[in-house]
Amino acid sequence: MKKVASYYLLPIVFFLLLSASQLYGQTLQTILMTILGSACMGLLTGFVIHIAMIVKKKVSK
Image 1 (cartoon, helix red, strand yellow):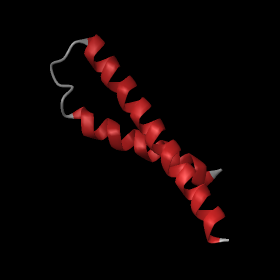
Image 2 (image 1 turned 90 degrees about the vertical axis):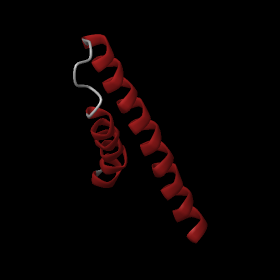
Image 3 (image 1 turned 90 degrees about the horizontal axis):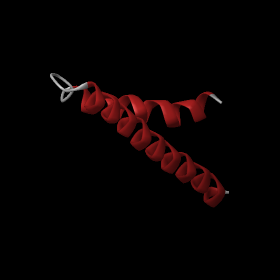
């Protein structure tokens, strides 16, 4: 479970940090949409990495 959490949590934090510099002086709606977009992109990236690791394990057997 620890490895699975890192597949999904680290990309979310990474995308939030990338978008954090553009949040200064924005409206609340823009900030919320940026956070939501970062979370969605992080989850998608984590899912792709997780599936790639599963396929790698299956292929290497």
